[in-house]
Amino acid sequence: MKLIYQWMLAFFGVIMTTIVIVGIAFTQYSTKTAYNNTWDQLEGYASVIEREAFKQGSQATLSKQFIDDGRAILSQQHVSFNFFNAQNEMVYPTPDANVSVKKKYWKHLKNGQVQRLSMSSDARQFNTTQEQLVVFKPVFYNNKLIYVIGVASSLQNVKSSLVTMRKNLLIAFLLSTIGGILLSYILARYQISRINRLRNATHLVAEGDFDVQIENPGKDELDDLATDFNEMVQSLNESEVEIKRQEDRRRQFMADAAHEMRTPLTTVKGLLEGLQYDAIPEEMREKSITLMQNETNRLIRLVNENLDYEKIRTNQIKLNQQRFDAVDALQNIQEQLQKKAAESGDALVIDAPEKVPIYADYDRFVQVMFNIIQNAIQFTTDGQITITAKEGFHETILTVSDTGIGMTDEQLKNIWERYYKADPSRKNTKYGESGLGLAIVHQLVQLHKGTIEVQSQPDQGTTFTLTFPDEMIEEEQ
Image 1: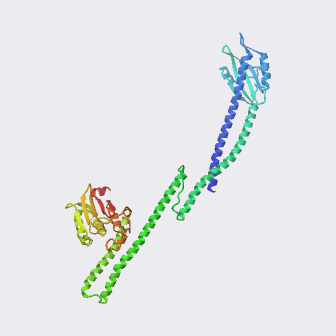
Image 2: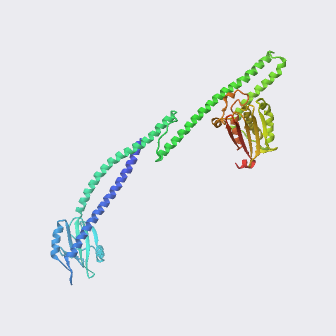
Image 3: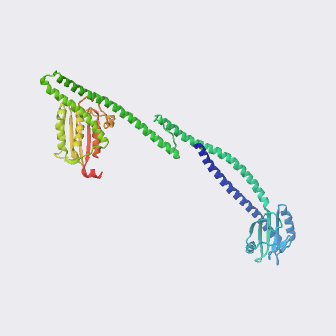
């Protein structure tokens, strides 16, 4: 069964249930009201008869003239009445000792309580075969019961008005049923249109359109679903953009890597052919071998950086953390990079106390600092690279500042991305050729549960700030 018909049945069921409940309640209320109004009217007649039919004196007697006149008038309204004496014997209109009020009602009448009854056709008080509504009203004289007035009206009069009312109610019910069907269809159609809107949007997303958005006023669960859908589409859109961005960088990296590999391979191949055919003079052979070693190391470094990044990203690297002197490690790095810094006209300066303890994996710490300092040398010419180290609160703080070309805000957003190069024109330099150095640095610092931040301005230089937590903090984290 289609959802629209399910919704229609649900709405129609609710509407019809409400109509039936209201109809039954209204019918019962109308019946009760009609009975009560008739009883009130009969009790009013009984009060008038009590007031006018009895002459109060030394002895309460009936005014037969008024009773006869009243009987003639009320009979035109299908109302009859009779009298019972204190011994519960009918004395009017025809005396009959065998006709009396039932004992269970007479008991209440003696206590002065008016009795309102619906009497069946076997009642003998009013000599009729019809069902009647009856009011028995006691009359007292000197606090003694002297008479009981019984006033009755045919129930047929009440039922005829109720039948008319029920016919009108049935017509209203039929009209309400038709209206309920139409209203159910409109409501179901409206809800289905909202679901179809989600369905159509889902088809668009399946076809690759991640810009679709669904309007929603936030009124009910379907609107909440639309909000979740919009958030999902936005997330998919962002993922699609990121995938394209990463794919573009991967392609650029593959092109750069192929270029970087081709150059040393071509060099090595040429030198090997020269050695093979004795085309290289004897005095140049040692220099040629050194050049081949450098180019081979360059290829190994390119491959290792990719392997390192993948291992770090997939949590395959286990840190061997220990306490050691950070300044001693920085001085070793300074010695290794001093020649490269000098070739760029840079001064490599360490500004730190004699000893600064740090808790880290020694080899990975050296790798991190080496990459950052080498990166600073790459982008600084005739400047200065300053390295600082100090103890903080349960942590070790290090900075690497340069006076190089700096970076824009857009470049700062992407420096931790794989394959990203702040200055693509420098891709052919012998440092940082893969664009993986800072991405590896970021992953390694996070692996130590440390932090790394960078501040930079174009043509002003760049400063990297790193923190490594102490052993106690490390364990708590």
